[in-house]
Length: 466
Ligand SMILES: Cc1cc2nc3c(=O)[nH]c(=O)nc-3n(C[C@H](O)[C@H](O)[C@H](O)COP(=O)(O)OP(=O)(O)OC[C@H]3O[C@@H](n4cnc5c(N)ncnc54)[C@H](O)[C@@H]3O)c2cc1C
Image (cartoon, rainbow, N blue to C red; front, top):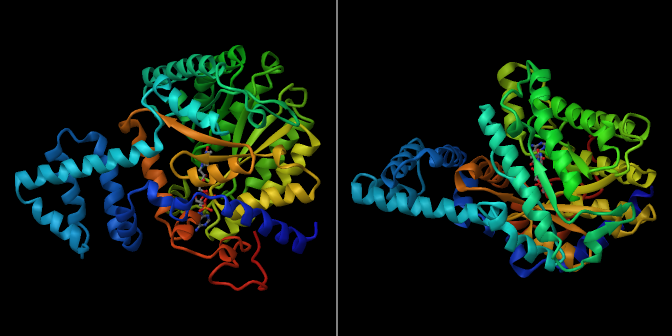
């Protein structure tokens, strides 16, 4: 493909999307508490203290308790900024601590409600219907991960089953939305549920993957049957690398069983930050083309993401003295994301897979649209996905351009949502984050520049290798 032509098309697509962003989108991180984000971004020590704090919030029994933890963690910051130093002084009295505790609890709740659409599937229906009416599909994610007992895994599976009853029944009444209901490969289910294997078994351990897989298989098989019965799509998320292979094997083995040859619609996740992700894609494409998945009636949806466990993977590898499995330069990850997008788009044209590009990065999204157009495709061939609360402006711009977009909608209570919230905070206070760069007012030319050729490297310099 002519790369210069592709960059021109990318700029056209990206400019059209940028023009359709709602005006508040210049600061998409408004979804997070702006002051806390600014302070945290500027100070690594403070950021670490806030993360530790958010982690313990669910375990706090009273406002006094909450405030003690907050002032305790902040006390570890050597030179706290003035507003924080003042709050710490207030923490010396019980009345002051209660006031800080109340403010912190409100702040965390306020933040969480931007990301979490309801405490139960029933409670989320209003938001899901509203999105659909506005031309936005959804995927429900029941919060709660890494279960430690069989009873917890049973409870998670029961909540998934409940969602598979409640959402498709309600979705049947939603108005017709042509661009969300089908693509060139066939009809698309209205109800879509994302599940995590670590929540379906307490036994998913890297040193004994077969046990975890076998234990999760029973519950996942039930959910696949259920999804098939009610005509819903079931998507299996990918978590950290220590469970990646077990998760992938489990999904591909189950979907290859004869009982699932004619459904349900299902999918998996490919993480572009992993250096070996091109090999994983080879494995998946072999599975759909000439392997056990070749005869399936429904294409396998591959959701392409960068990966949400970057800090964990780096620290884990360093602690064990292993080679770091993720790219360590953001531009390398972004370039790999674009390369995988192209391979997936080609794969979709060859049949067997559906592409879902999950990113809030205008460049990554525009790159996929531009490549597909120049390869002779229509925008409606592709699906884009965003996280509720973070990608809302991009979601609006995509829907306004009649491009299929799906919002990933966490459902659950604040306690279950804490790990989710921490991951979103970690990602978005990073200086490498696209949303951070966009919020800090970078010009469109820079936001749409090839990876590694943004502010620090002018256009025209050779890009590094993936
Ligand atoms: C609908 C949806 C579903 C998702 N499901 C999953 C899932 O199942 N599993 C999962 O792991 N994630 C999932 N994610 C999260 C996703 O992996 C990203 O973390 C998130 O979307 C941010 O990427 P971006 O392209 O939007 O933003 P960008 O700002 O362009 O990219 C940020 C990402 O770049 C990577 N990165 C950051 N710093 C570096 C560095 N120094 N070197 C190399 N790479 C770096 C990290 O992956 C980071 O998250 C999902 C996201 C969406 C939108």
